[in-house]
Image (cartoon, rainbow over all chains, first blue to last red; front, side):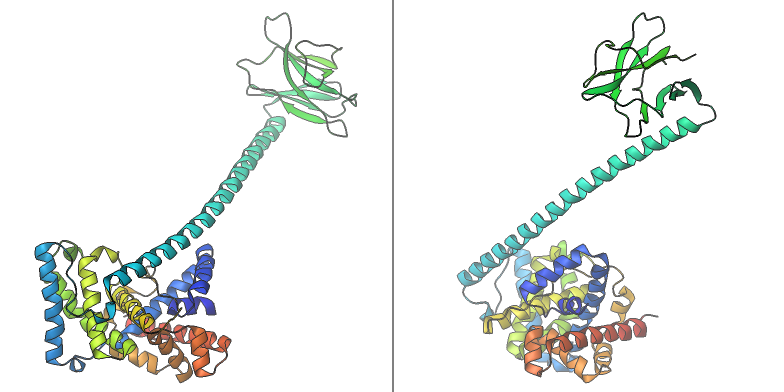
Length: 250
Length: 170
């Protein structure tokens, strides 16, 4: 907080000021505190406001006439006019060189800050994508739980588990699947109404205790029956082993 | 300022009349030389005329005060190599100091508020604002530990804010 107050008063060395500004930019509370101090620091200048008597009439008239003369000349020409007295400004080339150096420094600072911000924005985007993916996964799981336990879901018992359907969604929920040989997976098969052969669907592996819940990919119509069999990794186009179960959904 | 952007000389003159004592006073306090303060006053007002878009929004008095201080720092830098930081010319957040407070602020009130501060806080704040030196230089000049300088400045700014914020807005 001391550093923030010092920055607001404008007494930090340039390098330190840049560091504190970065901290302020990343911390909402510091940002608010800084602006509170800045608002107060802005008022300090008023304590130096000259009393009317401190500027004598001659001086007042001279100052105003010089400024107004320059302003009116600019107004007429539409171009800047040099000051009547510019003793401290130095030669024009020196001023231009100083401005150029200042511009380079400012540009360097800006590039550095932009680079930091870009990195922060990328990190933020990645985190947002992860949060979004987690949210979708959580939503899917919520839907799955609701489907499995909803009173209007239909349960079709099979050996070691059940097939559950609700509003067109089909799940296979197994509690005790046999351990798979190496290089093998379970594959789901579906039989469409009126079809004579089953169609391949997803493959899955149960967890260590032999349980698995899988949701079949969405289909235009609920299949007439589902089955699972053990197949080589990657799945098969047609069953190559005796089905673990075949369950008509009716 | 909208009228000045439209190149309204009369509007500019009104701004000059209202703020030239503030600009000149800050310049004189910082530069300690009436001729240099006059030059700086002209420079600030011609900058206002030639680049009115520099002022975006907020309190004009606060903005012109910052511009004046920064220009005075430029002059001080040309006299000696310094490395202190300028106060950016941007504006404080809305609500950091009420516009009502700003509208009623004047030299007397701020001087009174500063005078009410403990002298060790007031001296450091005035050195910081008008002296154009870093906190380390303030510590060196006042033979005060740097940490104490910073703490006193923070405490002083807080008291000043409380005095001006609560004592003015009604």
